[in-house]
Amino acid sequence: RDSVGPSAMTQEGRSPTSEIRQDGRVEVSVVLPMFNEEEVVLSVYRRLKAVAEQLGASYELLFVDDGSSDGTAGTLLEISLNDESVTGVFLSGHFGKEAALRAGLKYAAGRAIVTMDGDMQDPPELIPEMVRAWRGGVDVVRMRRQSHTPDRHLDFMLYSARAAALLSLVVNRRRYMKHIIEWAGLRETVISYKRRPRFAGRSKWSVAQLLGYSRDGTTTLCSLCARILMLTGLLGFSAGLAYACCILIAPTVGNDSASLLPQASATPLLFGGGVMYLLGWLGERMEQIAPPMRHTNFSIRMFARNGQDRPE
Ligand code: UDP
Ligand code: MG
Image (cartoon, rainbow, N blue to C red):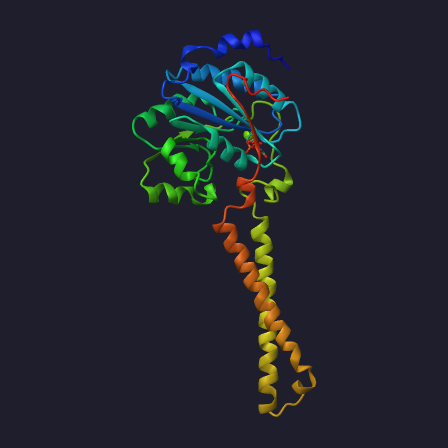
């Protein structure tokens, strides 16, 4: 692995286009989530930097380390300390890609914000085209993979600052984004592109993550529990109801077998089932309405572009 030499990078980092404009805002932010990407970090940075320099706009590269356990964070820190245009956001733990993106969007200062995978499967060479679309007055540029017809991939995107601000209010970005964009009257455009194979390293999706059991913002663990509660509750309640009917109807049809059953046992089934169902229902509602803790509560260490905040 190449080492990051401060001398080599300082020059690169001081190019005029990377300078922040007078109003304190850069024009374009590029946000990349990074989890255990030590093999690619440096080459990704270089390739992205080369593209950014050609943008003819001030820019910042915002790498979000998603609690990597390899050398990713170290390399990112070094890069961010040596290149003014690079900001490192370091999550306190591994929270998943969606949370990493949310953190990145929160800190991105650009008038336009591009989000993309950090393994160069989304070719950065397309960023200028996205920026052109944004300059033409579009709020959201969605890059659609040529091989996929459904629009469910929301990784490679450009947001205007107002679109990003609006979407930051949305708890489940993935679930609601399309509706919010329409509802808010934002202008959107779709550009098709060919997704490349991974540049190096391995895909970071673990079996647990694929099943939705991660700390990722897209987890369904809570709502899964809620649904189990609702289902169990419903079964209990139905059984209690059927039982109660038996007890009530039995004497009228002259069948006294029901009276042998302990009559009070219908009550706990009815109440227990009902309460379980309601708890599950509430859990499901809360998951949708209140921002789940994992979305907001992770602590973030952030280092300034010029390295003044170097940590101990
Ligand atoms: N990633 C992340 N946290 C995760 C999983 C992935 O930050 O828990 C990052 C990863 O480093 C990469 C991007 O998200 O930059 C896409 O991940 P990956 O290539 O593993 O996904 P795939 O391309 O296989 O869908
Ligand atoms: Mg990938």
